[in-house]
Image 1 (cartoon, rainbow, N blue to C red):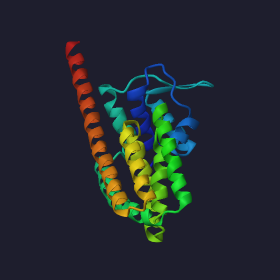
Image 2: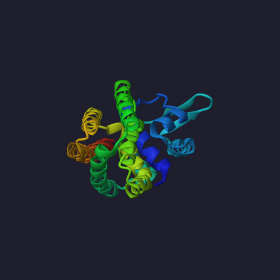
Image 3: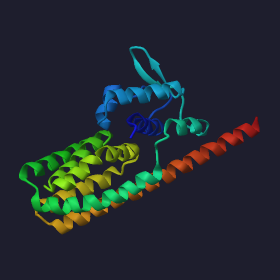
Image 4: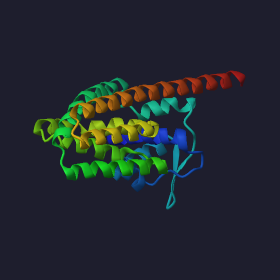
Length: 242
């Protein structure tokens, strides 16, 4: 995956939902931390958006929003995000549903006390992110990574680790539109099932969790496409009125 393009997807969503013209964007360090990516990728994403006229850099002060994302910027957005493959991401979520369902089943049988403590901490961090209105990517990745490694199955762990960057890509695509309440619910219930070694319930909850994520992702895409269509229609009306 081209990380900088995925970071751009996050920033475009962030701008659409949380930033007004003239507002300052989070710093390179803050973005890198919340998305768990390198600062060079963040810097590249910001520079591309600056070159496209969406943001402006003010020396010694940071990056500021120059213009909002609307119908007039659709072509620019499409050029910025050539690797945003919707069908591929949906396929990945289906695959993830299968592998993580089995991860949860085995983890409930084999998880150690230290790993359970990591899951507990990740849920505390998740709730704190929700409270502050911050991205839940870091505690979410920690939770699912801990479950995967708790299977103690070397092949399954290798498969999971080999996909972690793609996993992160889809997570970043969804970051601003996460259903945080459901995330807290499912993580909490999965942990409860794991603590009592209920493998079947843990597996079922994980399957429901990933399916909920997949459906939410599809809903997010529909809303984005609807908004783009509305913006384009408004732009055409404005042109005709001139």
